[in-house]
Image (cartoon, rainbow, N blue to C red; front, side):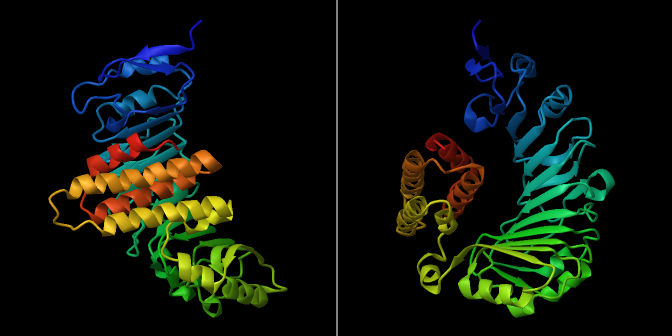
Length: 364
């Protein structure tokens, strides 16, 4: 019996393994036409599918996912309007789209990842998000928590180079907080605001190179403090301060001032923690791409062609890095995508081209 099946969701026949678990139906993947009907019955030929990637208007995807409880993961880019997923059996929902107005989640949901959500977004979650693992990747300093999630206990925020702890004031049941700084200097301001979270027992700070150890308040329920990416002097000060307390301190990637001076502005700087050669190669790839992008005049007539060469060059370099080291996993792929988008934004590349160039050019 053949292990492949032929499917046609509307953009022409494609051969896929019957055992396919992750189905990419974003337009750039060439499975679905830009407009027109989508033949959702083709999902029946992929009984093992657990993850669907989608982009743009709804076009019937919610009803079809609801009809197939085996689909547990939905990744939806460029989502618009009001998204009602209550009838589905989804466990993980990832949404991105400046046109989102509201999201209604099913009882089965465990994880919600929102990328660059609009400030006015309302989320209708079971029990105000009490059992939800909320991952809010805004990549900005002006962070706004979505309305409707005040009881969320576990939160991961990905911000730019600075954030105020006052952003978290509306969370009444916060127990587990992870904060990732995507840009230097990595400063969490208004640290005394953390005192209002009486249940906070786990705090993880990623790339908080600007953390002031002396400003950390006493947190009675805190039992675990993790610093991923920090200054050696900061790590030493935090450990000394909390020695003998009930708090377990874990430090990964403590770096010297010399290292930070050379790599602080490189988005792949922490890849060196998995492998020195891997991290150095990735940093070098970014540096080459950044120089190529910076050399392109914003009003140059061949700006888009030059941008495409520079961005595809970054992907080609990262393909080689991954071929040699095999370490670009899901998290690193997300970081590569964010970096790719940031470089493209500098040259005002249309979003549709950014997505297609990234999907076409990567092998990781």
